[in-house]
Image 1: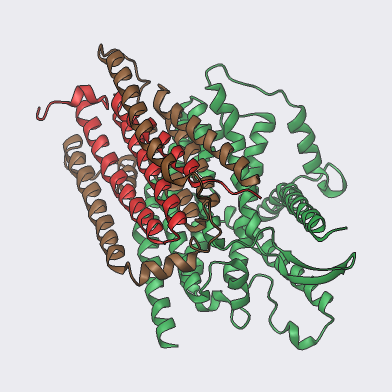
Image 2: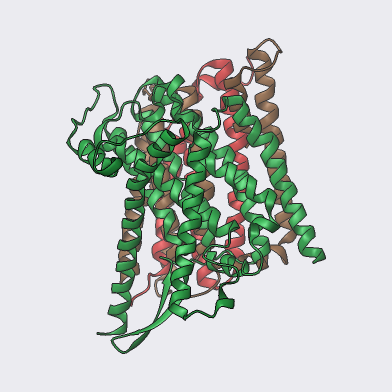
Length: 102
Length: 186
Length: 345
């Protein structure tokens, strides 16, 4: 039985992180930008868990736990902001909401 | 061998799903593809012997966060993204090249030290171990995380309450609005 | 025959038996529901096919398979086709962790084999149920969104809000049970109830769990996502023939699983109090335990149907108020009380 090398997971995480960056940079829809950020957080989580297994240390998994808490909090607040902006401006297109005040 | 095959299946699903999230013009389908990616990632976590994290990941991300995303997308009826911005072309190339550079760097360092390291069989990911660590050594961060959640809940509630007053005339919100306000709070 | 091959064969057999058990029970339940509704409303129910209507599920099945599969022109085809499958898979997956009986040791081809009456004994056990059950909502959301119809869309929206609100009291009720048993494995939870069933120690948690389970399975009085009188058919308005029946199978499988879990978590699972006093042979005892589990589960399925024909549907804001303003504080109170119980006894 051949186990999976750790660097496979690390490279997968790197690819996912890169795709998340592409999403944030190239998409203009606030919700999709938000989802890309979630993707990046998950790529980081995968790295944490890989290293946790490699070092045989539980701290990586505890950190993933904390990242999940922060992600949940972030989604609650972020989606509330998006809904609030949509009610005022009828759009979630970030180019339309780049003014600091209106 | 089985692990390696499973790794590749999950990895292809994750990368394909993530690519779809980034390029699909329809936000609802993007969100569903992201759910697929999260599933594949849960599979990878199981392969890394992190069973508790894997199941919590499914419950939190697929079960709650993405449902919330889909709820907001359906509620706002977000249209398909039309690429009217003249910057789109430049931005796309900038984004892709940035991602490729980033990937090359991270991948290089990833390759460097861990080619011969393999996934170990441990009991690190079991509920018992995580629970012991969370409630002894890491109890302070755990409590701070709960305060963070409380603050986020209050913030979301405040944001949705205030806008309700602007939209309505200060009276009680109609039934549909109320449901949504409660949801955002979660 | 080697031990590995034997183990694989036994596990494969277990999967086949459990899945077919669930699907056959679903068939029986479609008839049972209509018969019980007839009985409660003082009418006959289906009584033409077979003896007293007993072959009605078969007739329904044949009808579902042979009906024309209508695909409306305005749907999003991919999502429309995916939705029934997405609804069905988590519904069947959750049954994997339900323990039917105590483990059994016997000899086969010269090997000693320990047979678990449970598909997988997961370390994370009950968390698996919570997370997979929360995925059932995707079938409804995807169906509602893919149908491209305002009634379906409303059904999907409602179901997402409802599921997410009722998952929390359900999870908190489960936490109280887990605090008592000290383990997430369902087998340990059942073992721990040997003396006293959890329904005695956790009456409040039991009520919260049952109400939340009704909401999670979209049964009356919480069937807002498909409320016929206001939303036509809710998320499955546009579905016909076998796709529609996939949604129905998913709903009934959810019903069976949550009944089995209510039994496991609060009614002692396969435990029968006082059975060991009779000093029966061990195999008879185990058969009786499995039968006891099935009878308890059947009772809760009956409870579901009984409630369906007894209570009117909640209004949407009432549903949300109940979930967030009553059940959530009560569930938290239940955890505090359980903690105090554990500290003092």
